[in-house]
Length: 145
Image (cartoon, rainbow, N blue to C red):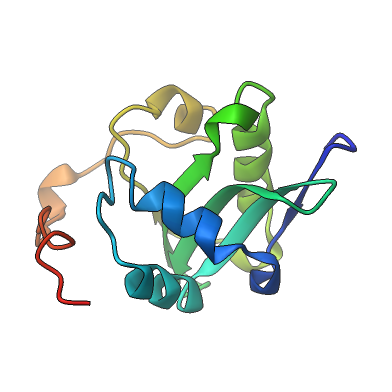
């Protein structure tokens, strides 16, 4: 990575306000409460992208047992830092992480970033008929946090 940015998996470096402000305003987690973000971070492997001045500009988290399965979630680069290959560097960093090797299945959901994830071997579900879900898209709007 160039000298202007670095990556880390150290949760102590995360700027919760940056993560919350982005996620509560994006399409996949609109209105998510701060308490939910904090709990999600505490229970996930998190990854940050930072400027050389230690300003957080990107984030992703992996929900995983570190042995068989992982779900990649909440991947973002702040708009003013896009176009520099940071999302690709972030995904490469995650994919090569020692604790995420030999997983049988890694999944994610995206509405608009398929070409990015395809570069990292993500494909459509091989057996979508096997998957089921409980889908509550309005849960953050009805949350009592």
